[in-house]
Length: 112
Length: 112
DNA sequence: TTCTCGTACTACGACTGTCGTACTACTTCT
DNA sequence: AGAAGTAGTACGACAGTCGTAGTACGAGAA
Image (cartoon, rainbow over all chains, first blue to last red; front, side):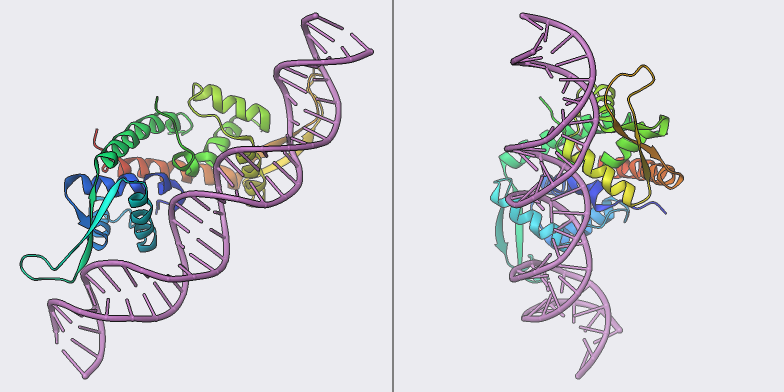
């Protein structure tokens, strides 16, 4: 069975996370579940990779964090939410452009 | 202008090199020129990246090296050529499969 | 013949992002 | 009460890429 290796997905982790955040603010655990479900379990991001991406992207100004209490129904525990910034949206869009280019270029070296 | 970053191409350098070697044995300098021309200058592999990929792939049994004197016309200098092995061909093919999967999965996180 | 440009590398240390492992702690389900 | 799920943090290891630098030979121009 074909698996997606971390070296192959490496350049897209930030993009994948930002894609989720483009819709609405979210937090680590929820994001990792969404990635899993959107990819039909084909890609499951590692916790450490995810949380270190948060730290890095916040430092770069692509996302902002805020702590929120359990949701309106009173479920769950305190979480750290992340919201995408304007700079982050710009970054996401440029990454999408880069993907289109990369896809086209890499394809030339694929014998399929 | 959109550029392909090294993190994005990272997982495909081996595949790209092996693609060239699938046609015929070749050597560093020539391979780097071919990558540049096939990609229409959109991707230029760094020398250090290329040569360290050779070392790694030879260690893994994907390629074999042999030293050859200048070509039949007597041009050029002594070079280290690399030839893809059967194991390397298998690896290349599995990487192509992985690419097809990755392409499909990453696309789901791209807003285009 | 000397100089420059192209060819064909090698060495080395720095850096970045991912990973494995481990640990904490609260909540919900059984 | 105990297990499974939720929601993280800490830390050191590792792999692949990169910048920088240096070597050395060949070919063509001045």
